[in-house]
Image (cartoon, rainbow, N blue to C red; front, side, top):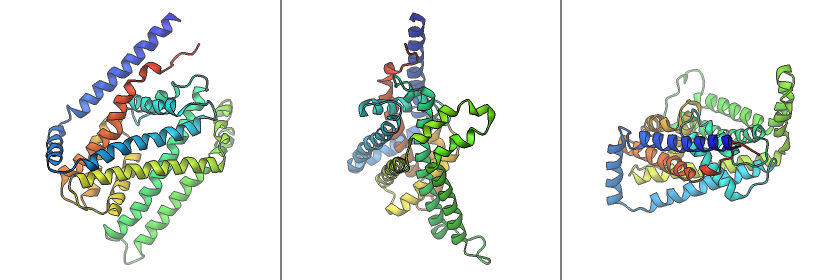
Length: 323
């Protein structure tokens, strides 16, 4: 038992150390940091703080919705309070900040649980992330269709209306993702047909615990989070003095988020990738490259770095070993 406690303490110290080291490397040691910092300070000295304060408040709303969603999902395995769920969300961000594609998020959350089966808890967390991905895909594909209408020239204009083709493909993909989400319970039936997976049938069956109405609630929560996140980006784009409409900002941010969802990254390298993708899409609206980069960097700081730092305060509550 004493050995388990020592290992647990070492893992917790390692998590905190890695989190701070990676954050330092990617924030303060970032080659673009000085230029972005100068731009940021220049804007703060010149303009109102209102938009920036509102973005920070929306960060709290964003992660509160996520905490409520996870609390709603995990109750099938263990009843947790909103406060514990919120701490689990922050811990997930802390652990995920230095892991590929944020896979550490699952461990950061499930190790907060006292009784629930951890494998089932991971699967439930993955299901929650899947619902968020579906929301990203829905808005991203609709934005792609809007983009082909207003920002690109149809390639096959002589043969057919390209926008109709794009709309048809987007609608098919959206329908496919929604079908998978709302029929997730059938996954256990499909997987049980494979002999080497049949022994894990009890784990897959966790998806059958959710009714269609409950899945709809989870999807609506994911859409709410997505809209909050998109509105934050719009406020920051406006904060850096780029004149765009909300629809234009929603379109380009949706394409940015969709692109990010299919590009394998470590959370800490996202700022470089996200900044480049944002510059590409918002470049159709403005030539203010440093402004776009500043908005993307600030959104990343507010929605990932600050929550990751908050999460380090709760690392001591992670339970790697149960009695």
